[in-house]
Amino acid sequence: MKGADFMLAVNYSTLRNNLKDYCDRATDDNETVIVTRKNEKNVVILSLESYNSMSKAARNAVYLAGVDESRRQLAEGKTYTFTTDELLTMENMTIDEMQTFAEKHKDF
Image (cartoon, rainbow, N blue to C red; front, top):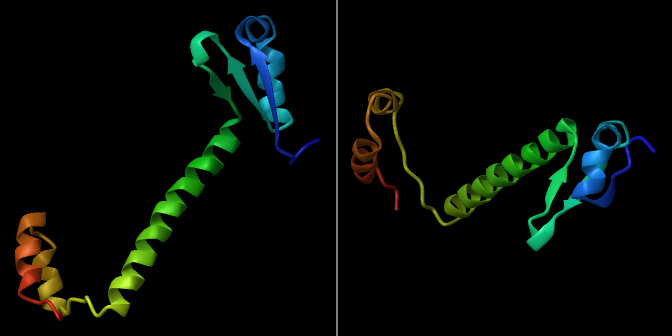
């Protein structure tokens, strides 16, 4: 069933003997294949499309957490005010120089 997410577990020996079939199931049927190995050293096979989607979701979660933190700081009045000229000055500064510069422009 295309578009639905399925997960199946297979041991290493079975996978090795049927690698193409399991790769096709991951790409064509959107299945996640868990390869079971000794000592719980399991691995996962999934399509590149699924991997990219998961990576994007993780990046989005980090970005949205940053947005939430910015909103919290704004609500608490923890802001900095800069002129356009000051921002242009900061453009070529190191992080340490920017932090020192910003301390002089705190609004809180």
